[in-house]
Length: 348
Image (cartoon, rainbow, N blue to C red; front, top):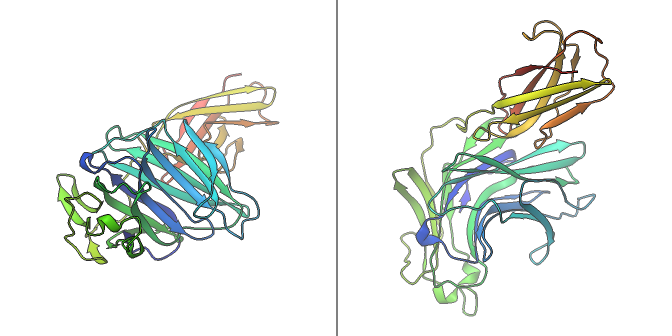
């Protein structure tokens, strides 16, 4: 399924669900695929070890250094890959996913000098909890290019069982900051896999794709394999879901608590977030002489784009020796929604 967002962007979003009847081991339910100098893809897999989340970026001739991970979420591992090109992949066998549950997958890229960072987050529809899985550093300036895609891959060619993916709620943010909702998808079956001797030849008529609806609303679906699977659409075919939303509707980031200590001209600030609200992308810290955040700050820090940071240390900070000091922190989430500020007194 290839969507209708044929322009560069810095955020892509899609929701995926695997119905119980469409689960089969050795399957990649790819949910986000993109082009460009940091081309890659992401999704969920039914692996023999576990239900895992995967995020991969390919090497490119214009990369000035190898791709590396600058943040590993809990349980995330990274390893180089080969075969269909080379690059770096991350996979997480610990978090897990369930059948019949919607998962929101978000990828965002941002510039750090002449490099680009790519972050990957997931949200479970049953718990509403977000997880920051990985951030990768690509040594080139890059964006999400081309149309976003999704596919089903049976990597052991065991097409006896049907494999099904449901997709909905796709978005891409343009480079000017405006949002585009995926409204159309082009469904197709890889024709080169249907020829005699190819991996899908024995199941060359066992596929289907289109739009369906249940109590959760309309969604795109794709089915591959299974003796009972028969096409109800053409290969290729166009499908559409009318969208009237103007932007994604996820709750903005919320800071639950914070603490600050000041000793020997060194200020340390830590904070905790509500993980059912949209995850952090950046933060800013200011030092005040009052709890009400009135007047000019005694010290104001930059907006730091460190998505995984929950602690910051400011060294050699020059503040009044005996006066009370208050620290204000604001966070910006991965959709650029800003939290309410939180002010705490710095302990000495």
